[in-house]
Length: 125
Image (tube, rainbow, N blue to C red; front, side, top):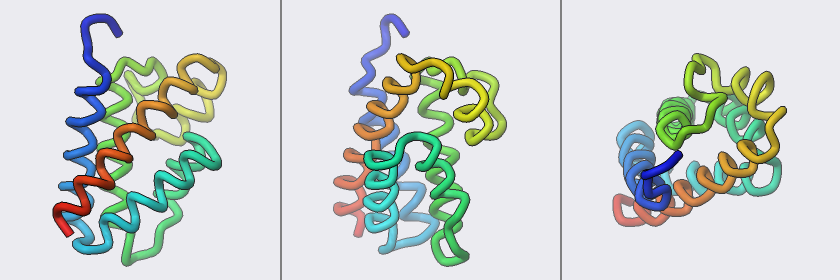
């Protein structure tokens, strides 16, 4: 996406993710964000979104906020699969997984935003 500072976008969404997840689940926000980052790094974008869906009732509100923010972020970053995505799992499975360049870019951007979110969450905790 030309003309967009992607690191600035990562920072913006890193803050929004931390803020929204913290509002939803309080002091557990940093832990949830850290675990989500680990899943993303170890298992990829699809597993990251699947992890959010699989969360239990205690973490569910934070996972829902994280999913919303991550989906908006990837859309704003210009990741094609998310431009008209209603379901992020379907977007990754049916579209993003078939475009290795976009998949790797999406993973890298999410990683950076979640790293920023983790540090922001520390300041909120």
